[in-house]
Length: 99
Image 1 (tube, rainbow, N blue to C red):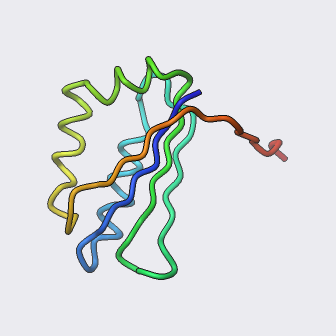
Image 2 (image 1 turned 135 degrees about the horizontal axis):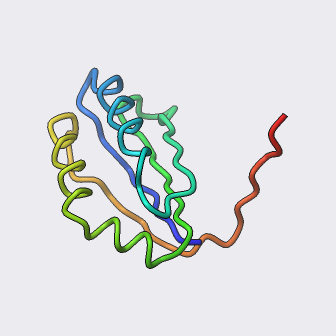
């Protein structure tokens, strides 16, 4: 598995738009397994996005696609700065059993 962690600095009041965008982002992306968004407790306008793909190839195919560029361009208005990305191999992933 392969993934990324992104640090997003939102403009004040951007959280609803970011959450709506994340919902749209997570549907229909080939090879994507998991996505989580965290709100920082230290900086309320900072969010951390983690995304896991089945392989580095699937991740790169998505990251380099025109569709992904379009999705990111749609959210730029809600961000105070460029997103900081940190990519890497997923070395531990423990999903909890469904109840």
